[in-house]
Image (cartoon, rainbow, N blue to C red):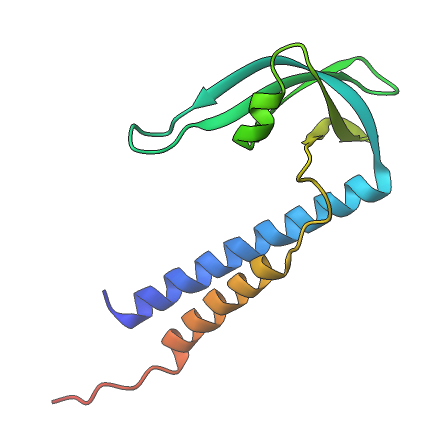
Amino acid sequence: MNTKVIGIILVCAGLVLAFVAIHKRYLENEFELRGAAATGHVVKQFTSRPDKRSNPDFWLQVAYKAEAGGPHELNQQVREEFWRRHPEGSSVKVRYLLSNPDTAEILDDAAGRQNFIPLIAGAAVLVLGGAGLLFFRKKRNAG
């Protein structure tokens, strides 16, 4: 693969990572400014395994009721320890957006202020590295 293709791939990956970081930060901000908390109940525990070689992913299906609306459900991947401590029928804390109660997440004991600096730094490294390969690569001598 030549350096131009690798550069394009790195720039694209960096832009996708930057978009993900910005979206996650925006959503975190929305939860802080316009969110509400509720108590949800675990309806179902389940696991999934993308392929036979990988470790299973642990999921909870949680039902909760919004302040100004009916019941809602959410499926969220959680850490194994949290999954084991919350069998079907147990209670969990959920936060959701008042303007859109279907946008919600389970608050586990690892929840808190996320650090977005590694995502932004990773995106910057990918974009700058890709740009470097695209624009600052040495010209090959025709020979």
